[in-house]
Length: 368
Ligand SMILES: *Cc1c(COP(=O)(O)O)cnc(C)c1O
Image 1 (tube, rainbow, N blue to C red):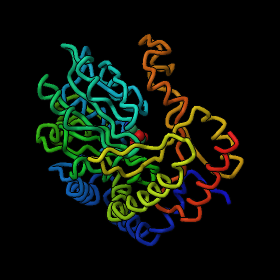
Image 2: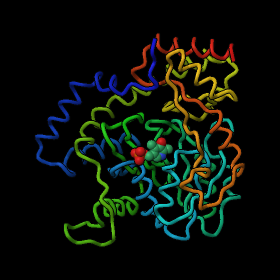
Image 3: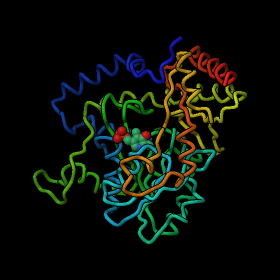
């Protein structure tokens, strides 16, 4: 049995008639930038997240970047980021001319460790930027307490966590704003690029509305040097179909994750830890092994696809070589980069496929 890491074609086939109808409706509308599909999606996503506003933008990186701009982050400022994240989190800070200041994760949850944040705060710090990594919420309450104490804003990177709950409340407005990505492989994925920012803050919402549209509120009147970063109405129409399915699809991911949690317990692999206040949406199911590369190789031989999220931490990327971080600067992030492996998970994955992954993993671990 060949088991792909993720089957996006299967996701389309499940919703094909509804997606095709939405695409046709969008094409026939005569609106190819902005319009009712974008506005309706923004309203529906804000309602889903329990936030006042949702502002559609071109992608997740832009959502992070424009939200930071709306918080007045610029040259000379520092933003606290996780040492273990997808590089987009850091790049958004760098695009503002500001400096990402890495903080190590909690070794069990893989999310930024709130106990280490205060030591990283300086007079230049402006924003704390936690990531809800792999679909599990970061520990928001202590982060918000620290932010309030030091007069900092909080921007959440929700790119991997659409629908996740922290202490019973859905992500969307715990901090000052949340940046979301609709990259096709995310839990809520478009069929191209897309992103949005949710917030309860009218000033942040207003500034993003202007920034995403060439710095313009009134056509051909430009208040600031803005950007062209708009959510495509075709993608918005598709996202509306998929948003209606998000809870059901997240529940299917959760059922697969529960089978893995029980079925892999005797393998010696380090399995994901879920704090009692967290309701993750399992964007990724990530195990750890000191023999990660051999494990991945053997799974491939058994026809099981897997990926590494992520093989090189941002501080060791060539893109950040000028920052001068040495090997060993962030040992937890570096250990994760050498030990993590993401197993197949997705709403269209069949029960026999899940069984086959577990059987292959058990066999492979026995040999290793
Ligand atoms: C996917 C992702 C992004 C960037 O989203 P794009 O839409 O690809 O720009 C940002 N942060 C994290 C944690 C992500 O996983």
